[in-house]
Each structure stands twice: as structure tokens, then as C-alpha cells.
Length: 338
Image 1 (tube, rainbow, N blue to C red):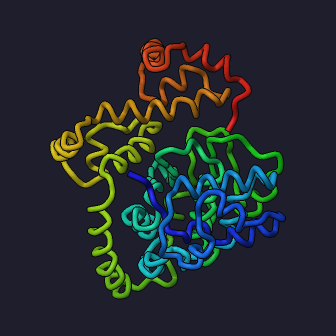
Image 2 (image 1 turned 45 degrees about the vertical axis):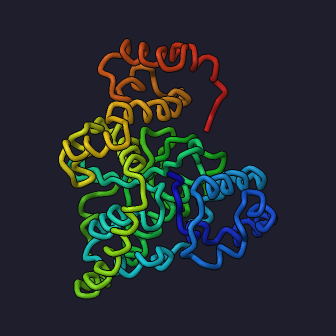
């Protein structure tokens, strides 16, 4: 499956790139995007292509916060056909759960999960593409848009506790501090926003149940059509990708996340000649390098994040997969950062 996203994900690309003295038309053409496509927010483009555009633009301009600049002016209206339903949700929690349910309508590569821990909630976010590696720009764009959305829905009365990034901090934190206005943690175990449960349950001043019901009936038709086209394998991989570092990537939890029982999930995987353990292994192969590159994590911590109770089991798995020990790989790649 080729993950697709509405061209709306690149809203403000022209403004930001021109402000940084780039030629957006040249860069769009370089990655294979016809510039006129961006005038129609309902058009879909490959997520990997959009990620390539963001990373190239950041590199050429020397702007580490290119994606964050694009997020700065986002509004609820920029969610396309989802905008109306989001605008009328009763609470911020309802609105975020609506994004979780309908995320594939706007971006197949987006994964979001609300994790409650005591009196706090982690809004975990990942952008999971098929071919691109970890993208700093895509993650910061997604986190920036989510923050702007929460702020807009609650009429500026949004006060998160902290924002977390698995990548390293930029040289200048001014843009991050201006946009998020809260504690920032880089080199974190996850990408996401932390807030209180009370914050999540704040009432939306524009809430309207009748209008929300009307918008939902319309979108459910689109969701049904979209589900027929999307890959169940890719969706399950996205769930594992987000749940594994939380210690929750069990087949029971993943089945629950997708609204089916375990046997139904297993049958679906068998149809595609794969298994849950195979998908877990695939995701581990991708995630392991994110954490090994981060020198703040001991090998024991990396082992734990990937679901191994014993570091020795993790080491055996890594050698079996890559023909080298994780310690040797880390020593050989000390200067590798993302």
C-alpha cells in the first residue's frame, strides 16, 4: 500500500518556502508534485513524496523548524471534510477521538493514541510511511498542527504540560517555545503532547450535537469506502508502531484498537499470508535504530522499549536480524543523528 494524504497537509508550503528564499515550484517539481495540485485540498499525494519535500526544503534552506513554521497558521477549517464534525464536538477529548477514528480520510500515515496515566493524558502521535525513514519535519508538522487544533477548539484556553520529541533539539528553540508555550523534551521516548485530564475534558464553546450527528453520517460513508481501499496490514503496523514503546503491543490490545476480536484479526492477517508476530518483528526492525541512535538510552532501556524483558534476548534478536551486536552497531554509528 502507498500511504496517501490530502494536499492540505502542505498548506502554507508556498508561504514558508518563499519566506526562506526557496523556489517552491522547483522543489515541488523535483519530488514529482504538480504545483497546481496544492490548489485543491481534496487531491491526494503519496505521503513519502510529501515527507521528501519537507526534508529537502529544510535541508536546502538550513531551517531546522520548516515543518513547525508550516503548522503555525493552521486552523480547524484545514481538516477538510472533517472540519465540520470536529468543530461541533462536545469536548477536546471527543474531538481528538474523532481524529483517531477518521484519520485515514486525511492522512493514511497518521497514527494517534490517547494514553491516560493518573491525572494526565499523553496524546501520542506518529507519522508512519512505507519507505521514508524517521522524519523530523513531518513529526513537528503533525505535533504543531495538533497543538494548533487544540488551541483553536478551546478558544485559546489550551494549556498543555509538555511536548515530547524523540529527535534531538534544534540549535534555536525560539520557534518551539513561541508555538507550544510549555515545557519541551527532546530525545524523549515518544512523540506527543502531555496535558491534564481536566484539560482534555474542557467543553468546546461551539459544541452542537445535532450538527455533529449530521456531519458524522456524511463522513461514515466516506470512511466505509476508504476502509475498502486501505491496507489492513499497514493499519495494524501503525498501531504496533505506537503501542510497542508503551508496552501494549499485544494482539489483544491491537485487536481492541481496531474494534475486532483476536480471532478476527488473526484471520485477516492469514488472508494476507502474514502473522501478528511477523508484523511485530517488522516494526521492531524499524524502531530499534531510532532508539539506538539516541545515546541517552542504555541498551537495557532500548530492550525494554522493544518489548524484551531481558537485554540478552534483545541482543540475540538484534544479532539474528542484522549480523552485529547492538553495542557494536551503536559504536559504529555514534555520529548518526536524526
